[in-house]
Image (cartoon, rainbow, N blue to C red; front, top):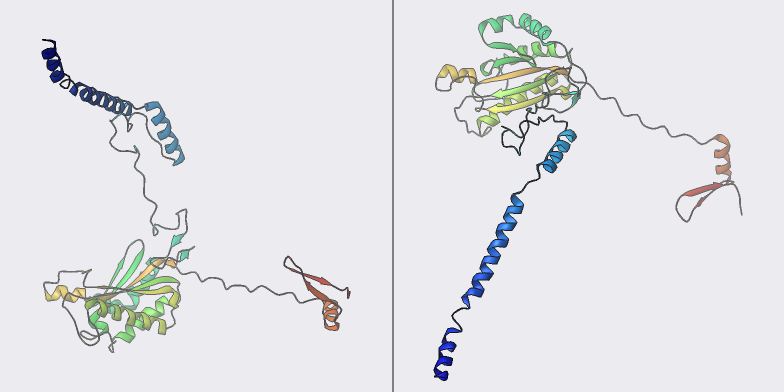
Length: 304
């Protein structure tokens, strides 16, 4: 009987070991939830102090009613951060303006665009009335739109006989002033691929460069000039019609309201000549120049 009871206990002693693993599992689950709960608790006072400190450091006024932690704000910052003033907004900006594209600091405005517009209207009245030349003025630019047919042949960047009078007229008005000038080339969307120009972009660049070289040849400072190529990618009209393509083939001379300010020439430092007495002593060998061990030199008249 006792032997049979022992055999019965030996069969049950391994059945309760799952309780050990289950207890370990529950302990781990409990620890996990404790950690998650502690992480979920946020000390709003400390976070508010951090946010206020950052706001003061970046000079951002932040209202306490709509906070990030309260979940009621519509944005991280209550007041929208205004963008920096445009480089072309005028001389009232705090920082010195930058010349368009060139990035050269400009400390003053050039000749007023209204005055230049009046001079161009008088000099090119016949071309403006016929629609071959178009003048447009805004706050920052005075643009002169020149039809490519007036300056160049079809698919060419070599100036025709009508180009010289136009370039000379422009130069006579632009030369006495210091305003920056940008020459921009445009084409239609009819593809070109010949021995000289592989794309409309190359053709527009060559035409703009030709006009720029004409202005330089008439005495306009190259530091004021630059050319831009837009090809077919900035059309003025719809390229589906011949009239639209005609309007897109042009060279635009854009005059900036800012002036080019020549940089002052660098002043070479003057090298002081040695005193006559010292020069005579050096010539006579009475002055010795001794190199010091730690670097440098020492001048002495001692002969020992």
